[in-house]
Image 1 (cartoon, rainbow, N blue to C red):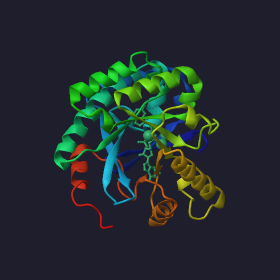
Image 2: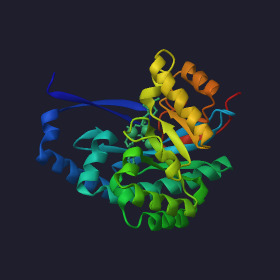
Image 3: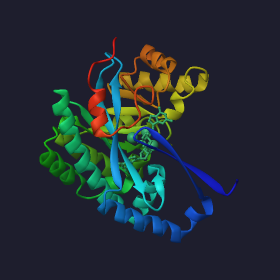
Image 4: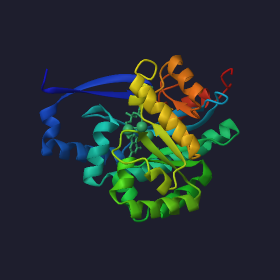
Length: 287
Ligand code: C2E
Ligand code: MG
Ligand code: MG
Ligand code: MG
């Protein structure tokens, strides 16, 4: 049906499919309804956070987690963040939502570190409006202090587009974040329109290769070439590199052979609730 769009949300490892009409979402009224529902969701307990492990290819150990927000709405069902984050961004709700995610994720990460008996990194996604927020460094400092998460455990995921919007201001914000000890990750790397030269102009600690390049890595020569180039470049610039969307052993082996530092994907685990993450931490996978 040309008039329907499929939304695929993964909640606690389950897959849920929901069908809405495209027309519905295009209507401002409906967006407002989603916005209103989202406002309520933030105040009630409809939002949760799942954590997806990031694994070192050096020893197969979990070295960190990415916080991914989930919304289970009584009215709209499981809504994918690809749908509601843009609405939150448009309505400005993202600032409230983002602050809630930061506080909750930092608290849960500290608890997981205690369980693990070692440091784990926490990666949090920020959207353009959050990144432009005047007091972002102060907010992060406050969240770190309140939660007790060491600054060097915190990674902020931004996208190329956000950097290029206003490069001067962005560079200043990134320098301030780095002064706090927070690491900067460029998410969905390779999908932006920017030149690679910017990597040397911003204080970037890590790049996350977009999963669209990882998917066909083993049989698409062009995708493989892009991934090879990204890894080689990152290594020569002394920037860590992680690949997202790793689903098969073949993809893992390819990335391992090229010297990719870390991996993330369904091969290891989808995003899971903090309780379930604790269980993933137990014995390291055999080398
Ligand atoms: P992202 O930051 O690029 O997150 C990775 C997405 O890929 C997640 O989708 C994750 O569930 C999915 N994924 C992970 N491994 C695999 C795999 O092996 N195969 C496939 N096919 N997919 C995989 P999710 O959770 O639906 O999030 C979508 C996007 O929503 C995120 O993309 C991020 O841009 C945004 N987002 C999620 N949580 C937050 C948040 O707390 N704040 C903000 N501002 N944005 C968020
Ligand atoms: Mg991300
Ligand atoms: Mg990504
Ligand atoms: Mg993304």
